[in-house]
Every structure is written in structure tokens, then in C-alpha cells.
Amino acid sequence: ATFPKADVKLKNGQLRFPLGGKVKLWFGISEFYLPMPSNLDYDKIREIRILPRNGQFYAEFVYKVPPIAVELDASKALGIDPGLNNWLTCVSNVGTSLIVDGLHLKSLNQWYNKRVAGVKEDKPQGFWSKQLGRITEKRNRQVRDAVNKAARLVLNHCLKNQIGTIVFGWNKGMRQEINLGSKTNQSFVQIPTARLKDRISQLCEQHGIQFVETEESYTSKASFLDSDELPKFGEKPEGWKESGKRVKRGLYHSKDGSKINADCNGAANILRKVATTLGLCLEGV
Image 1 (cartoon, rainbow, N blue to C red):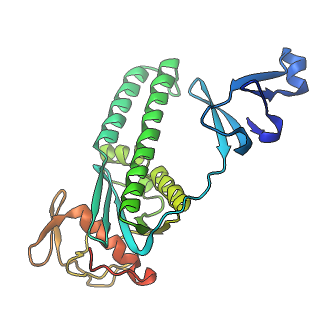
Image 2: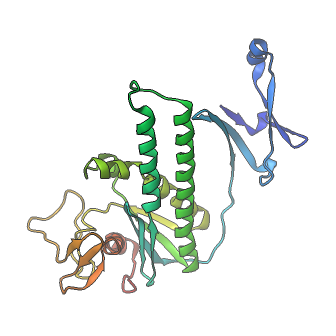
Image 3: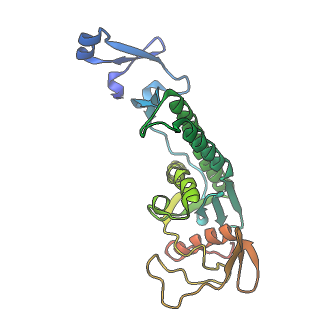
């Protein structure tokens, strides 16, 4: 249920939500009250949403956030390669890099799936219970917390180094259509990278950082150090072959044998995808 600001009144630190004449007639209840959050300004609230989720109710307060003026340089860019064990691998053209670990979130999901499977064992399809609602809500809160903290890590890195452009590698639908085996599929689809991308985009808008989304085909195969050609998805030229190769998980060898982190190679190539369009200098990588 959505309540516009005009319908909600503040009385003695309590917000009054009207329920209308029909509810009053049927149930004898004309309104309900919730405490006004102490960290919000009542005048800035636009609307309030009441959301039922897994046996609980949440109140969402919608308000406008003013832009934050910070000194940034749009020619300084950060390339982001999303993954699983390394949730986000970030490489900039000013000589900095950052990896956001994804193992903790992966572990949370595996524990959640194990608990759900145990509760649902020998139960009919579509079975649900209060216990499932509790563990699902706990897992959702943990995921939401992880998304916010990971996005804040990336933003703080940009603010610290005055980076004014973020380039995020993303193929639409890749998390749903991916085929890496049942176990890896389950982990990939349940890791909320799309929500994290949207959260980073929101923080960029608030702080005046340019957010660019680009497809990431062949960024993992091609060698950044050897300046391999980066074809678009479905447009690979006949006879195209990468100069380097991934020798094992997490390790990439360039043509001359230089060893670099495989995900960092991918993040650097994501910057190369848009370097010409955005006029970026990549010597600092």
C-alpha cells in the first residue's frame, strides 16, 4: 500500500495513516500509527510504502536526496569486472585497483539453500512455512547489507582518487541465461550483481560521477598487455585468436609470459571497450 505525503499527518511524533471509510465500516478501524524516524525530516518525505515480506511488514520512506558536490576528474576512470569469488574487480587508469570479495556472500547463499532444502524435504511442491519466511528474510537482509557496503567501497575509492567515470561490464540477462553447471549456476543467479550495479549507479548520480555500462564480451579472453582486438558479442572476426591465455583460475599469462590477475585483465579490457568513445588515456593502467 502506498500513502502519499498529503495523506499522512504527523501528531506528537507519530505518523497517522488513514484507512478509509470502507475499512472503518468493515473492521471498525479508521487509522493506524507508526513512529516518525528520528533521522528523517518530515517535510522532505514524498510518500510512504507499506510492504509485506515473509510474514513481516516494512515501511519504506521515500524522500529526495540532494546532490553532493565533490571535485572529480572525468578523464580518470574505473573499470569494473563483476564475477563470483571476486564479486567486483576494479582497475583504474590512475594506477589503483580494488577487489570486493564475493566468497562471504556465496557462503551465505549456500547455507541458505541447504537450510531451505532441509525444511522442504518430503514436503509437497510450493510448501512454505513461518520458519522458511524467517530464514529467507534474514538472508535477504544480509544480501541487502552486502550490496550497500560493496557499492560504498567502490564509491569511496572513486572519491579518494578523484575518479569521475565508472565503466561497468555487463551483458544483459547473463546471470539468468548463464550455463556453467548446476552448482555454479545457482551461485551466479543468486548473487545480486544487478542490484549492486543499480546501487553503484544511484551513488554515482548523487555524487556527479559518470556511470557507463558496456558489454563485456571477450574481455576475459583477450590480453590487455598485448592490446588484443576486442570484438563485440556475435561479431568475432574469422580467425580471431587471443595472444595470452588463462593458465588456471585467477591467473593470466600474456604473450611474453607476464603473469597478471585474470580478473584485473578483464577489468582493464572493459576500460579499453569504451576508451575511444570516452577519450580515456589508459597509460596509467
